[in-house]
Structures are given as structure tokens and as C-alpha cells.
Length: 565
Image (cartoon, rainbow, N blue to C red; front, side):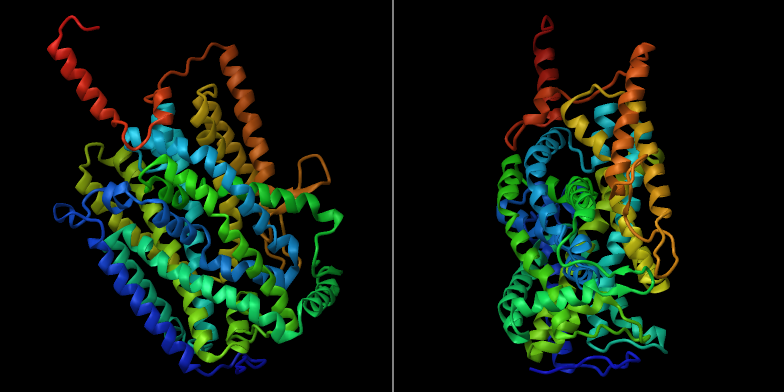
């Protein structure tokens, strides 16, 4: 065991043994990423010259590949960094809600995503906005869904790079004086990520996710078993956490947080959990993982076994309290306390160097998988719902794949510039906004999976009202420590003093506007025609024919029998 913490000024020396292990494992996954272009690919399909092949992995992933892919997609490096960091900084309200949220999530997946898979299978939809465009025959609504997905995903990608940067900082790769040398390792990681994503598409993160999950499970299981005994046991851990969090914050005059949410925090806690569960599978990267599966039952089976990750997440969250007891000192190179360094610093302080290297590599690699999937999902939205709909309606599958590959590079470059050029706390706050924004796509997508009762213009009005309300409400939350806007995601529900997750409040506004406007338009006999889907599409499975095949068979039959209706 060794201890290597930063001093009060943030000065660090390079910890070579963990660094070498991180580099070796990073090279291994990079090689896997490049080799993935040949995995499950026929010689005639090499080059992945369609969005089905490049952006959805050929739509052929089975149960276990999907389990690793969705696990790597949903449980990101920022999960491993931010959840315990929130527990360390302010306690259960801002951190532990992630555990019940991932439990509530999977019944939603079981019910909704199999229907989305079926209709997408029948019509060849690649993105959620494709489905909206077909279901409602509304280009403005489809564009709104696409833009929301892209904008909400960008800070999420940036946060994966923040996760990598926290690992590099703890390893000593950084500087408060030479900006280029400080960021060079992150730039190199970005270039490799961009290269294998461009080459192999979704197949790369699908394969890498297997390595990532093995490393993560090994690191977390060992940490949960080993670290509590190392620092004195769970009773002393919770006692130390209670002492730290119940202390008064000079900036607010209130306690820093609470080990267990108090009665005044119950509404914030459950709305954070529910709203986050509703939002997660509205993100385009989550839907990309769903549409890459080979059957609707693959999704249902995964909804039953993915909660295994929630067990890991619960133990991981509690490591934030372990870090309090251990006296972990997460000081950045500028000498300021950076909560995002807590878990990497805890592992570096209390584990042997070789195992610390494995754990830090798991966190860094855990950033590569979701970053790749997110960039692919965002680029697919741009290609299908902006480039093809508004600039080149007759784009070939090869042209779509080429544009999507190039846009995936631009998306990752934008995220990198964001991380290098801005205070990372801005990325954290924008990610909170991302959850609020993406939740406003829920009414259109989920209602569309079951009914065409809502008018498409009413759904558009509801979306706009939810986005506007959510953005303004989040802007009005001021961080008392820094005085900056977008300081959190909790605010009073309209016309009450009950504090809840802003995303849920905005969702209620969205749904009410959609219902009221639909009723008004129906009262004025405004027609809302157009739907390319049929009820049978929502239960289709892998062996059911595609719509083009059905139409071709019908045309052939019509030609053979001119008297056919």
C-alpha cells in the first residue's frame, strides 16, 4: 500500500507504475477498437457503408453483447466519478438517487423500447426523430427531437472526457503552467477514440465494453470488500460522513448535506429518481444501443438482467463516504478542491500501485465506450434528420454513412474543445440541463408508441413550452458558493413551495400544453392526418418482413392479379 496525494498547492509527481498499466490497457482496447471493423462483417460489407452497418452494428447484437453494450453506454465514466463525488460533497440527495433511478428505469425499458425496436425494424428507422417523422408526418417536430438529442448529448460527451482527465490528473499528467503538455494525454486519447470510431462504428464500443465491464466489476468488487476494513469499518465510515456533511457551509449557512435524505428532501429525491429514469432512454445513445439489437426479446431480456449494474452502482456510491473517512484530499493542479478526483485519488491512496493502475484504467476506458456511442448517435441524428431531410433528400446509404462518420469526428472535437477551453463545472451544469431538455422528448416519443390522439402541433407546442420553462428555471438556480447561474437542477414546483427536479416540472408543463392544445385544435376541427406506421408494426419481431418487402410482395401480387383490390 502506498499514499500519493497532492499537496495544498496541487503539485504532483508522476506515478509511473499505475501510469504504465493504464497505457498498456489503453493500447489493448485501442487495438480491439480497430479490429472491430471486421467483427461480424461480411467481406462485401467491409467499410461499413451504411448507417445500419456503421451506426447500428448491423442490427444483429444478441443478449450478452447488448448487455455489455448498454451497460457500457448507460454506466459511464462519469457515473464512476460523479456519483461518489456527489456523495462525498453533499450526501445522498444529490448522489444516491442514482440507485433507485436505475431500478425504476428497467420496467420502462421493458414496456417501451421493445415497441420502438419493432416499428424501427419494420421501417428502417435509425434515430428517434426518424420514428417521430414517420409517426406524425411532421418535419418540424422531427427536427425539434433531433436538435434536442444533439444538444443534450454534447455536454454528456464532454463529461466522459472530464472523467478521463480526472484519471490523468491523479496520475500526475498535468500542469498549472504548461497548458499544452497538461492536455496532451487527453488529446492523444481523443485522437485514438475518434480514429477507431470512424473506422469501426458501433462495433468498436460494443467489443471494448466487454473489457471495460470486466475491469470495472473487478475494481468495484475488490474496493467494496477491501476498503471499508482498511479505514475502520462501515460504522466509523457513516459516522465520519455524518460529521462532515452535517457541518455548516459558510457560503449557505446550512449543512453541506446529509447522509440520509431528510423529510424536506423527499420530493427532490424521488423526482430526481423518476425524472432521470424517464429521461435516460430518451437519449439518442440509449436508443442507438436498443436499435442495434437483433430482436425485441433481446431488449426484454436485457431489461431483466441489466439491474445487476445497480448492485455495483450502490456499492460504488458508498465509496464517496469511504473517501470521507479515509481523508482523501482531491486537490487539482490549481490548488483547488475538485470533487471529481475523489475516487481516482482514493484508489491511488489506498491500493497497491498495480491495482490502482487497473482501477484507473477501468475508469478511463469506461469513458471511451459511452463517448463513442454518443458521438455515433448524435452524428446519426444530424445525418438522417438534418442533412437528408433538409439538404439531400436522395442521399444514398453510402453518402449517409460518410456524412455520419465525418460528423462523429466534429462532435468529439467540439466536446474536446469544450473540456479544454471551459471550466469543467460548466459542463457539469450543462449536463443537468441536458437531462431536463431530453425529458421533453418523452411525450412525443412515448405517446407515439401507443396512440395518435395528440395533434402534432400540440406536441410541438408542448415541447417548446417544456424546453423554455426548464431552461429558464435552471438558469434561475444560483450556486450560493460561486454566484453562477445554472447552479443545480432542483427548484420549487410552479405555484408551490415544494422543491422538485426541474425536469419533472417542465415535463408536466409540456404534457399539459400538449393535451390542452390538442383539445382546442379538435374543437376547431383542425385535421391532423399522416402516419406511415400501422398497429401491426409495433409488435413485429426479427423474422417479420420489412415494410419495403411487404410493399414489394403486394405490388407483385397486384401485378399478377389485376382484379385484386
